[in-house]
Amino acid sequence: MRGSTPSCEKGVQRYGGNTSCVVLERPGVAPIILDMGTGLRFFGRTHDHTTPFAGTALVSHLHWDHVQGLPFFSPVLAEGARLEIVAPATDHEGGGLDADSAIRTFLGPPFFPVSLDALRGDITVRSTPEGPFSVGDARVTSAEVPHCGRTLGYRIDVAGMSIGYVPDHQQPGPDATEVAPGVLELVRDVDLLIHDAQFDAADFAAKSDWGHCTVEYAVHVAAQAGARRLALFHHDPSHDDESIDALTAAARLLGNELGVEETFAAAEGLTVAMEAPKPVETAPRPVDAAAPTLLIDG
Image (cartoon, rainbow, N blue to C red; front, side, top):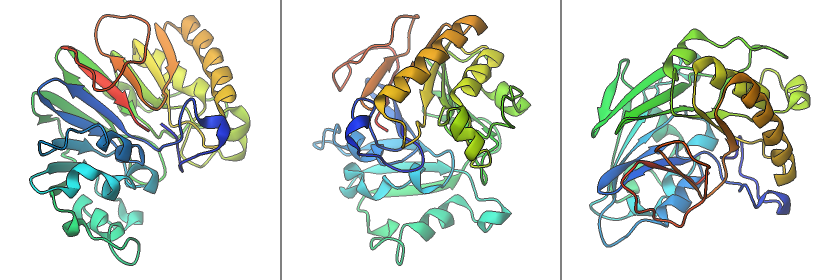
């Protein structure tokens, strides 16, 4: 939910301060985790530890704020747990490592005292396939997204619903509205688009090459793709709750003008029911619903 680094100031408690982690949950089906930021630790606390964990994590890229929750995910510290991590190989500037080698590089001395193999669960890492692939009965598609270093967006089609996940997205320039064709194709007509909304206009003017976009640009991406609902995600760590309220209100007005049915700000602990359009509402965890649900823990 929060971009770049965790934030714990008093003014960010309502939206939360953990970094990127979204979970697609359905009763009786292994969860699909989108990114493994510090929010992954909090998702782990909801797991029933009487049964071994099993699930798949789809990682957009290997920056710290998207992977640093892995060694603190308590379910994989237990025997019998199974976690498959699917992540992009790094580009040439990132050393040209496959996903497994890259994760083993940062998760181990001297960067971290514990290695991947020291976690008791069965953790496998593979590079994201070039074409569509299956995770259980879900169809997953990925596409390159402009950012700093190799970054993927994901689309999940399951149970008649579609979710697009583009947490880090470089806006081409100030006031730009053009979107990379591959990104638009990836999230075309999704029921829910979870999209980078880190900057306001002043932020972008000062940090235009940091790999992110404005809240306004996120709305344009959703509108051009025909996304039905837009979740503003990856909030700047310096934006307090009131700032996000104001940015979301402006984004909602623009979304209404451009034909986006619903625009809202992602918040830690928010559960979004993936079914017929209705107002977004929070719900106690775990959610017992037949339709897919998304849990935002960071």
